[in-house]
Image (cartoon, rainbow, N blue to C red; front, side, top):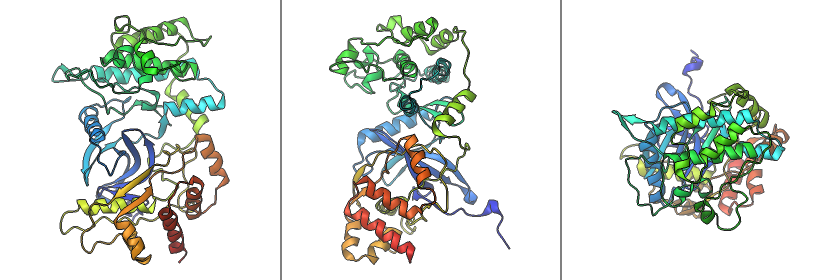
Length: 463
């Protein structure tokens, strides 16, 4: 008897992490964390698309990165708003703390603006107002968030175009609350956190408040309207200029006067001259009587820049998880497995062009990042992974390399969105195995072990 379609177990296409997450492809990387597109495996073989955020330093277990992940979980997991990326869960696997985030089918605002600059297009004023309005609504919710009537006054403190994501459905969401704090927490004023370019003068001096987020809103508005980086004309030390109150003026001729006033009230050098709350900023923005953009307009702009595609939760990566990364994940699972449990199988089927066609205009991936991985513990006795079997077939020398220090590449070639579409059309019909090997050669940063693994994988499939 045939198994109903809804009950069939879908083939695993990525590397298994923490026993329930199937890592498919890296979708973002910053100084403190990296984010992977993943499927969460649930009861009955049901899979749900999500994003897994973990520290950039998987091996060194950086205390600073771990603290940022835990801080985001502590604060952002309480927030549920349509303009904030939701945190669903937090966990720890083999000493690595991670977050399960809402998966957004889109790209960050900085990337969208870069694509517009590359194509020589300017963002319509109405669209800039719509995006800023969504950001302010998310901030208003966070700033006014209360528990049992006690307002926490959550400050983001790192609001930049890179931390605002635009979805293919026309949504605008704030993400990355890694250095956020509440107004109930005391700080030493000795450590400056965040990106200096978008800071208010007082935040650059160590004094943060919710009004610092409003200054950052003004900085984002400037980039939306002007199409260039905020404070890009600063000469000399940026931090000194920021602390001194350097704020550029709007130069675009078609910006209405009410919006110029809005920008000036967001980016006032003195905090007393700035908007006192996000609610006040939203009210002032509402006084502009021009034509309003909607989510449908943003959706159309996104489709024009990135490529129209279904808003789907199941978007498979079009490259194979590097074999050394599989080995590292398998070693982590082995170290975390309780006695008597079988280590997680890391040898998942690869994705090829013949199996799955990636969505048109898929977001570019993070740049190549080399990691020196030291496996501190071996899998339990009797456990066999795909990586260990390959190492055994290759002789003791390669087995020792897998058991010891392995130089691996966890990223893939970073392409701009337009390049991704152009190269995707050129390589249609190309087998995924050949594609992966060619990308590794093009990167020019893959070590001897990675090239050996790619060749071995090709020969295994040929047999």
